Length: 125
Image 1: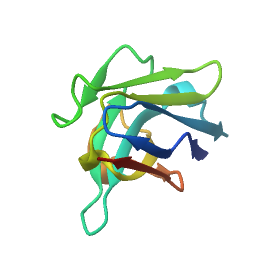
Image 2: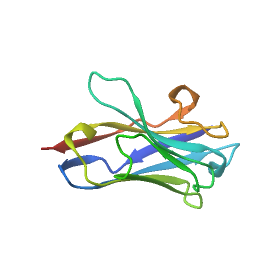
Image 3: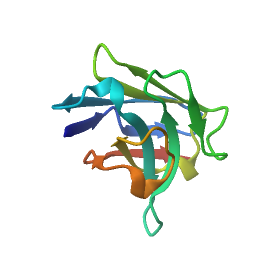
Image 4: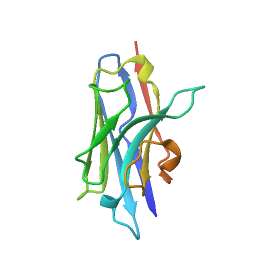
């Protein structure tokens, strides 16, 4: 069981940066044994994969739309995963969700068992 709380969202101008954080409270299974991912959902659209990181943080995958602009990282000592977002564009506007999976590795939405409440990111043009 793990509880996730996102923070760091807000309003930013196009070209700006934000850093999202996701603090985890894990019981029964340590945080370092969860694959962590970030997803986002824009109004009227389905939730989509943004980035994910392996248990150790060595391996990461990104959606093509954010590759080269976003960086996912994790600090297992702090039970926290981050999403550094640079060169933000209006199309990045969405609610961003942190998620945890007990799979060996996955980028698939329905393989993440635990979800945070989301944090709003709004990018103005």
